[in-house]
Structure formats: C-alpha cells, structure tokens
Image 1 (cartoon, rainbow, N blue to C red):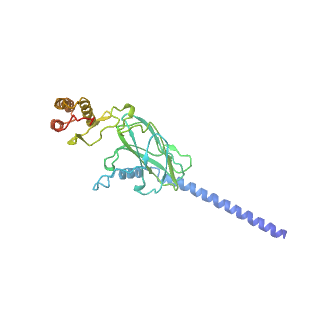
Image 2 (cartoon, rainbow, N blue to C red):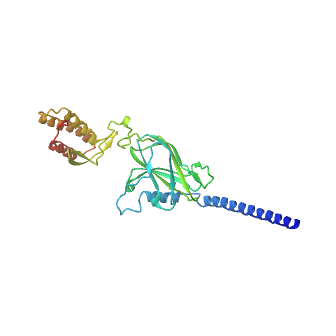
Image 3 (tube, rainbow, N blue to C red):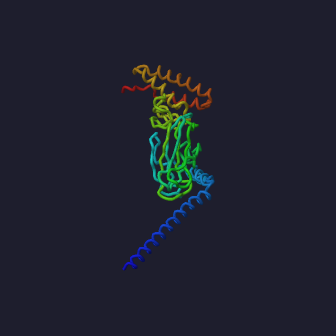
Length: 300
C-alpha cells in the first residue's frame, strides 16, 4: 500500500511539472507572438494610409456623398467605447465636436482592454467626400496592459478651422479581443448652441442662420451664405431686418422699406469691396430686399 501511495504521489508530481512546463511554453509563445507581430507591423504607415483613404472615400468617387452617423459627441467628458470588428470599414467609430480656429486641444485614446491597438484620425467636416485631413496619431503612450504597440495621443494641438470636426477611432494592428477604448480630451466643450464652432458667451450670433444660401423673406437669392467671425451673411442681414421691424408702427411701411433697402445696400457694398460677393450677387440681394414684404409687424 505504501509503495502504491508513493507511486501515485510521484505521478502527480510529474503531471504538475508537465503542466507547468506547458504553460510556460504557451506564455513564451504568446510573448514571442506579440514581439513578432510588432516586428512584422513595426511600420504601420501603409495600414493607417489605407484606413485614411477609406475614410476620405477615395474609392467611392462615383457615389453620392454620405454624412456620417456619429457614435457620439465629444463634450470634454471622458467617453468609453467597444470596437466590434477590426476589419470592417463600417465598424469605424465616428465622433464629432465643434471648435474655433486657434483653439488648443488634446486627444488621448488609451485602450481599456489588451486586444485593441487604438489609433485615430482627425478631420474637419462631416461629409465623407468633403473631409479635410487635420491630424492622426498612433503608438505614442505605452499602454498599461502589456499588449502590442502603444496608444495614440496629440497634445497642445491648435485647431486650424472654425466649425465641426470628425474624430475617427480605428484599429491599427489587431491584437485580439475584446477591443475597448476611452477618449480623454482637453479644450473641447459643447457650449455652442448653433454648432458653428463659437462658444455661446463669445458668439455674437449664438443661433446663426446656417442656410446654404441667403434667403430674404422666403426669397432664395442663390448667393452663398458665407460664414466668418462666428456669424453668417444672413445673420447680418437679419440684424438690419430686426431693427427695421422694431420701428414699424403700422403706418410707416414705405419709409422703413426704403430704409431697409438703403441699409442692406451699404452692407453689401462692404461685402463687395471685401470680395465676398460679386457685383451681380449684390444686385440679386438688392432685388430680393425690394421684393420682400418687410417691414412686417412682429406684434400681429
């Protein structure tokens, strides 16, 4: 009986030693796999360029432009996400935020699981065929999970335009599953009612008229409604219309209508001098003002 017990004990010890050796071998292979993966994909420029071309829809020039369905909005609060498919273009995560030219921001996208090799690209605009490339990042800050590669970050970055930006989160080199991430930003907030990139407290027109063309009393002039200094041309014309309407008493229509035409003519003259509009466009705006039914009583 004692001999049998010793034999069983010896067999158990040999089995445990075998399991331990196998585990060390597996761990070693996994470690070698990660190192090998980094050696093979050490220069991920081609991968990131391919993603960038897909996002910019360079391969889809014969189709209509598509406005993104956003995963969420960046408002200065940390956001967590979970990537599903590392290979599908449709699985890219799109976030938007509004900013001003000259704003200084930072964006950090650390992985929250070992499997996700996070990277991001920043664009100006919201329609895929019209995006302007702004910046991208990959492998800047070491991840805390010991996975492959590092995490993306840009800091003290100056925004080049005023308006809406699109941040695209994507996979750079697939490390496994699950694929979680977090977005940490500074310099970005949502205190912008009309999403024109100007904060409400600094915006002379916090609810800007953002139509593509200048429309006066229902008359579409066809003149581009250009944006500058947190306001649009339509905003400036509406300012004059509001002042005229405030002076309307019910029996001074023709006097005020003539005054409206004169004030808008002065405004469009400066636009013409600044080369914002052509002489023909100035005439078109003037004709629309003359045909309009302004002033109208805002009290009725």
